[in-house]
Image (cartoon, rainbow, N blue to C red; front, top):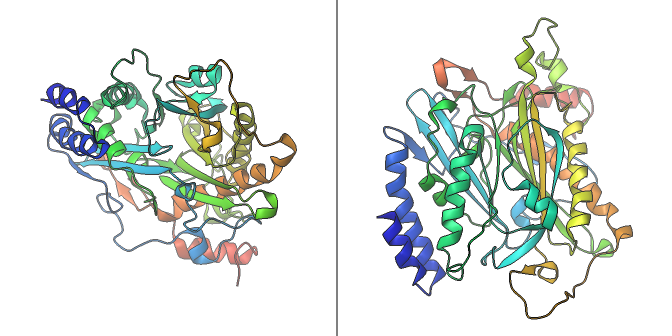
Length: 412
C-alpha cells in the first residue's frame, strides 16, 4: 500500500495533498513498527512522568547572555523553520522517538540551503556529514533519533524525499540523520523506530512554539545527572547589527557538571560527573546534537565558524565532551539569497554574503542560545521510567531556583 500511495502522490500537483497522503501512510507503517506500542506527538510522555506544566528558563527568571531572544525564544523564530516530533512509548521498554527539523517550506532538495557540520567529539553516527562537508549544502530535513535507528531513519528520509513532486528523476539523496543513545531508558536493541515514524515527524512539522523536554528524539535521553530531552532557544540581533535571527534546537544526552548561568547547580545538588571516583568507565558516555538555524546570508564556510561557537554553549552548561560522547553541531542558513538550486542555467552564482567582520554578534548569539536551549531541555523534561524499571528524574525546579538565587544567577 505504501508504494502504491507514494506513486500516486507523485502525480499530485498539490503539496498539501502529498502531506496528507504521507501522514496516512505513516499510520499504517507505524502499526507494523510499533506493535503494542503507544505513540504521541503531544504532551511530554513517560510512565510515572509529572503531569504539571514545567517552566522554561525565562519563566523562572533565568536570563542567559546579553542578547534578546526572538518572540518565541525558539528555533522557529527563524522564518520558515518547522519542527515535528514522533514520540514512541510502549510497555515498560520503549522510550524513544524522532524529531525532524525542516529548513523551509519548499522542496529542500530542489532549493538546498548552505550548511556545515562541526564535530566536538566524534563518538557517534551522523549520516550524511561527508557530503555536507564537501559541498556545503543541506538537501533534506534533519532527522534526530536514537543510535541504532539512524540507519532506518536515513532510509525512510530518502524514501520521503524521492516521493516529493519535482524529484521524480532524482537518483541520489544525501539524508542527514543524527542520534544520541537512549539505551538506559529505552530498549534500543529492539529498533522500534519505523519508516512511518520518520515520515510522520516530517509531515507534522510546523512553525510556532516548539514542544520541549521528554518528547520526540528526547523521550529517553538523560543530561547532566537528570532527565534530558529536546530544548530550544533563539536570539535576535538589533537592526544596528543586521537584525538577523539565530535559533538553536538541542537533543541533550550527555554528562558533566551542571552549571546554570554560572551557578554550580550539579555540585550543589550532588549529581555530577566524577563525584565518585569509583564510577564505572561507561558512566562518561552520552551525546548532544545541536542544530543551528539563521536567516543571516552566510555561506558554508561561515556557518562552520558559527557552529563552532555552539560548543562554547555546551561547555558553559558543564559538558567536558567526554570520550564516549558524540557532540555534533549542524548549522544552516535559510536566507533565500544564499540558497543553492539543484539545477541552474548559468555557470556562475550570484549572491549577497555577510562580511566576516560582522559575524561576531552571531557567534555570541550561538553561544548564548545553545546554553539556554540545554537548560530548557532540562527544565521542561519530565521524570521517565522505562527499560528494566530504570528511572530518570526530572531536575527539581525549586532546588535549581534556590541554588541559582544563592549564586546570583537568577534575578530576585
